[in-house]
Image (cartoon, rainbow, N blue to C red; front, side, top):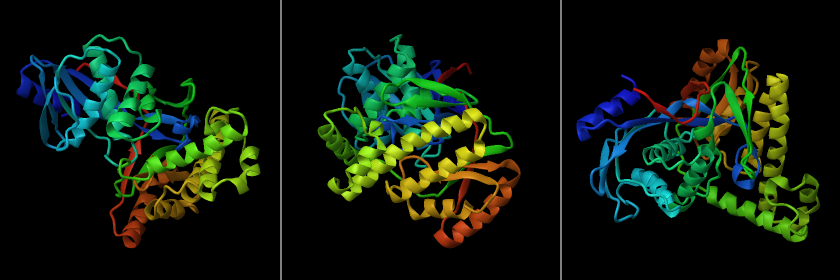
Length: 387
């Protein structure tokens, strides 16, 4: 039975009414990491691992929400709006509802059942997929008329304000606007975007899951953001507000300021500025069919995240280092917020199984953890399922 069929079945059993079924994709980001909240470019793709939500209006002010995966239930009084200490999973939904209310948009109380196959804590953006599905469902159910970009902004603010994670807009934008067989280059400053066909030929996108589960709320994500803001404030003061975000700072400005900046802040700025330039060059590689050159830039991104931005960990570094000499691997890097999760790799199809067998043995010997592998393909973004 498909996931959406399972949540529909449970919804009908619990509430005896027909729900709307919404699917919203997780995402991979091929290149352009930690630049979204610095106003730069990113290159994500929606994938075939998704969050699923069954949703329908409630007859009273009380909505009942069920997480099928966590085997948990909670009731929410739409007249008394506050975070749920004992049901943190439900706060991702509450935050979205709050953002509709802040915009003066009326949301009917609702029941919902949710599930999904986006691995939690792996860097595939499971929370943004859930929030995007909820936002899309609320928008449709209440005929509110928000477009997908507005919904992405709403979801981002829910993460920033209700959950307390100062994330950028990439994850939810990719979930809502992804397109099968394409990557999406997003300008995080203007929200202009462009699709690029993704032609992998005899290669596939493969994710190796370290088994290290990160939680951005408890990580140093917000610390990195404040360090970048400190760097931006320095350049705006020095150069009369000539730039709007850190990604726009010319590399020469940074290099000329080395002695004036805190060394750690300097490294953070160097990574962001170089990564923004790298993604533009990488898009040229994709357009020209230079997949090997693209892969090299992916690995260069990992080195920046490892040494300059310092959001990697020994497990991620081990996986990237082990694949460095493998000719079948075009590129390898950590993906997502950092401190765990997955590496994203472009690997020739005929070598995948053999590489995984060898890598998983070495990983367990060195790290004492089981290695998981996910093969993903691109998919469409958030949509209603007629099931």
